[in-house]
Amino acid sequence: MTAQMHVPFLLSRAGAVSALTLAAVGGTLVAPGAAPDAEAAPSYAYRALNVAASKKGSPYRYGATGPGRFDCSGLTQYAFRKAGKKLPRTAQQQYNKTRHISASRRQKGDLVFFHSGGRVYHVGIYAGNNKIWHSPKTGSWVKLERIWTSKVLYGRVR
Image (cartoon, rainbow, N blue to C red; front, side, top):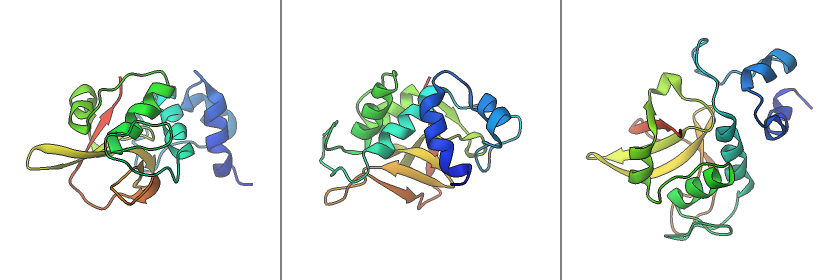
């Protein structure tokens, strides 16, 4: 197994240990595209990311907040609640609650918001490599998918 394959295991066991400490002990752990001086993502963001990934294959249902079915904001709310953070219910409310960050400062575990006409209509959790964990639409399920548009905003849960 490569060092990269151990990252989710290390992160799930990291607790309050920062990603920078893990990198110093176990090798590079810098997210692609992150600035060298970028702050480390909070440990709860990695826990939320791991929770979302653990729900892979769970069916989409409008208004569902888990544990077996989710809509987009239901998945992010559930994942962060399991990681110890409260988020409001809708994608727009979640965007309003986060600290807005630029694409160049995004980290694994940040929220990715899709928008049109000044309205946020979808949210997922950034997984690195321009991919998100999300629950996209009726007939689909929780999955890892490439970000398909440039009309996205990023937010960090506080």
